[in-house]
Length: 396
Length: 224
Image (tube, rainbow over the protein chains, first blue to last red):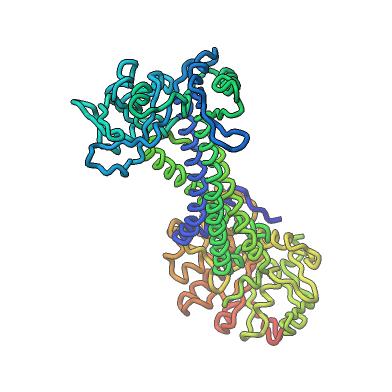
């Protein structure tokens, strides 16, 4: 009986590859691009997801916002003026601060700027506790406090300050708030959990009431609950009746970190599209390998004949070609995984996040490449094995 | 078993699917240590005869026995095993792996016999010595001349110590001078005890061989 030692199989499987290196390299390229895109898509989404989750962790998940909801008839409602004060009394609440939009107010750098150019900046009256409740910081100056809240003093959100071209408050900087000069007393750092405040200009309630007739009913009550998921949930449950005891159903409570979590989850759905594209690239790669293998079998017919004459069984011939296609697949897989990790590394470096390649992406990529090599090689290998020795040896 | 002839054909017929009768009843016995030339014009059926003798093809009728074993009922795998261990081939167009070293080409003669790599190389070196190419061992086959290539092919056929070596037009791709040298080599191997069957259409080469079997139109015309 003729037999082939397993150790010889590897050498046999690379005979064709070694004698046609460029062709082998090109056929590996297709698969490796497919695998690389799969690995990169999985790893990049994982990396940015981990980034988002880390960001959420850093920002804390115990910030809640309370706003007016809708009445049963779909009309807009208002929160009572005392809602922030009542919310503050809850034991689950660490601090709370109200903010009320000053209707129609605009902010301009000077009186020469046309009134209709608002820069998307809106004016809000805010409690002095707001900054502490948001755990925000000022880039420059300080927040409106008990003293300055009575006067035309304004604190600019990060984006609002940028739009107005104000970078620090060295010297006296003034802006026009609805035709009146306000002194800028502080500029905030960006607030990732409540990005809407980044483009606001915050003034004190007494000043807003005096100058613009703004009432105390909050547009939003920002609430910092006690640490811990249970406390946050308890606070969220109690907030409606605390904010509006008469109509608790007309209160909308939300948790800004949920939006970021939803964003992290959305990253996942986004990747499935790219995974699909990667799979198409992989399919093309597989067809490429099958094509190269069929050509290889045709070209190496006399080699098949010789091997049969030297005593190879049909299955030895099949396994040689199958092995070759398998090796091409694995090579594509290894190159692809490395390319994918490289691409993810470049992305992580660019985004300044930590590289995170899920092991399932590596294992899956390699497994897909192996499977693909085997499937692509199956038909060509069978074709080679079916040749009779005399057919294979016939010259011409 | 040593008493049985190395190769015995009895009334072998071969008809191809297209109706061509390549062999029409050939009986032939090759004894151990014999050097036989099978001569005939092209189309006489001598290549088919070589394929049938070498178990590369099955006869349509009649029987083939190698070392006394009748092969009518042998499976494809059993025939492969026989070729791996008992039969050596030399082809007109050499069929060397161009990218592989000479010694590896020769060692491939043992590849399907289940011999470990180190042992294969060891025996390949000895076979190369027999054909006088020891100094070319490490070179790639692509670097060799035609005559050298055919000697490598002869070494590959011999490396497994087969019962019989079948050579199909071994000098067909060589010029007269190198062809003569190759025949000298084959004669030398015969004198050293090898059993050889040479198929050729070259009368001159056939003339140098003691036993000549003449084939014409699928029949044996003469055996001397």
